[in-house]
Length: 334
Image (cartoon, rainbow, N blue to C red):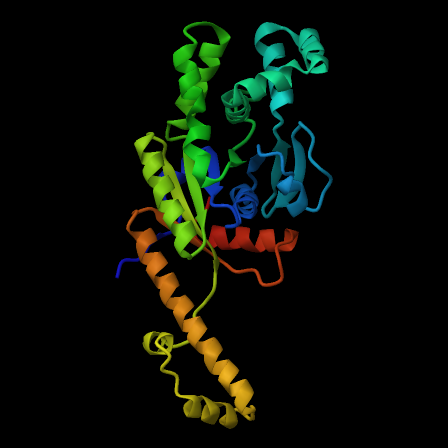
């Protein structure tokens, strides 16, 4: 039986842009936030970006909705800090006009006319071009000494179902625009996203559908020459049965009398109804454990490193994010 390669490889550690994607419901935004904290550990400065308009980062850190500006949102162990940015396509387009065409005033007029919304609706790909363009700008930004403003940028990206289309939309734009600022900007985005400076991480649960979608996304990323990073196995729950007992229990072979004797020796006296319920839960647990083992084997076949994260029983709050980040650091995230 094959098992996933565990940990954070040197190749992944060299990336400066960490794109986090996953099937809806797998905890993608939570993992992106925890990853930003982990990467900031030890005194680094990290920017956490969201592009889907859900304000998920603000909710996780229990703060006000994020504007279109970079704000300090958390500190990390060892003196690091995490800043967050909510990228709005309209604001990004206005910024683009101001940077490349000196159209600050004209851009504001376009916004009042509704022309920006019209343009992004007419050409839906334009929205993704603007979003990835802003991400590229933050990754490449330097200070007066020529040092990168951020040691790493974490992008809470769209789900796996459209991640390749999102990341590669600018490639089509670069092919259409032959000269000028749009051409230069597009080429820069394409170079970044297809280089070793970018790693695309996938978040999954140990369940059939998320694992299947994760594997399909990895195949698509490889086909598009985009670099998969690690697979985050989220909400992993420890097995409660000895390994030798899992398969028999999953087949319904649970000795109720043996269970009762064990409970009695521990000072517990259950009714027949409660005992039957406990036996039923044992069977269900064993079935889940076998399904998770099968999911692990499928993930191992894609030959990517994996980082395992525990199930948080009490819900995800800021304290839980720090716990997840600590677990990531223990598995080599840096």
